[in-house]
Length: 177
Image (cartoon, rainbow, N blue to C red; front, top):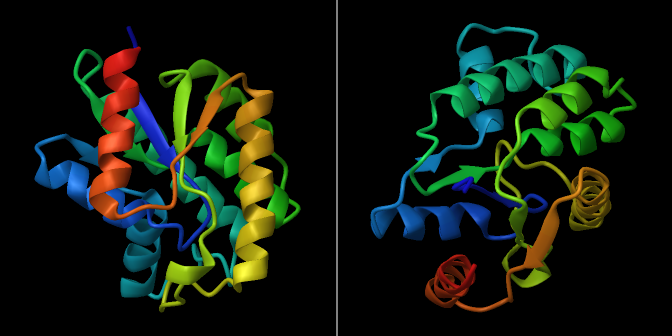
C-alpha cells in the first residue's frame, strides 16, 4: 500500500505546524519546495521567484518535487508538505500551462487519501514568503480542491482544532484505513 501521504491546503492554514508536530512524533516529513526554491533563488538573486518569473518558479518546484518523490522511501509512512497536484493549482493562479504538472501528477501517485487543511482566518498571517491576502488564499484553496478531485484523490478536511488534535485526527484516519 502506498504510504506517501500529502498534507495540503492554502497558505496560512496551519500545515507547517501540523507537519512540525508529526516530525516531533517521529514521522518523516518532505518539506514544501516553495520556501526552499525561494530561499535558494533569493540567495543568488535568481529569477526563479513567483513575482519575477512564475513559470521558472513553477519549473524549479516541479523539479524539486520530482526529486523528493523519487527519494522518499516507498514502504514507510511519509508526509509530504504539498504534492505534485498543488502545482496544477499554482499554475492556474498564474495562468500557466499545466501540461508538465498534469503528466507528473498522473505518473507519480501518492496515497489516495489526502489531508486538507482548510483556510482558517483566525490563524492566517502574512510573512516574507506568504504575501497572499486571506481572500486570495481561499481562491487558491478552491483550485487545490479541484486539482486533487480531478486526479481522483479523496480529500479529508482536517478539523479546525489544536495542532495536537489535528495530528491525532490524521493518525487516526491512517490507522483506520
